[in-house]
Image (cartoon, rainbow, N blue to C red; front, top):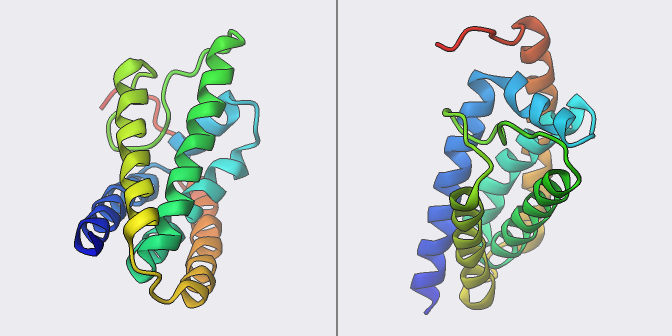
Length: 161
């Protein structure tokens, strides 16, 4: 079962690598999503940095990374759901290269990703948990700063291309 859990952790890491790459390409999208949720733009950049650190944590300690990933996804889904139910319009989660409508398929996808995190947590090897937590933070915070600087240097695109 440890092999299945490790594959789940690696799969999640790949998903978050794609998300971090998308944040790097268009850092204003995740900042705009955070703003639509009622948080500041910097919270969006922190989320992008957190995801970069999460990739490292998933690879170094599938158990810890799976727990953190499942919790993170649950918090995000709850935030978007509360915003939606309170009447705020959230057009895009800012979580990938393409704009994602906040519909049932988005929630289903995230529930499946949470399931991968739970499998990694329940059955995965502990790995280097303390080192993974430290390394995740060491990567995450500078990445958040980088995204904020990149966003300030490249204003948000207004065209559809």
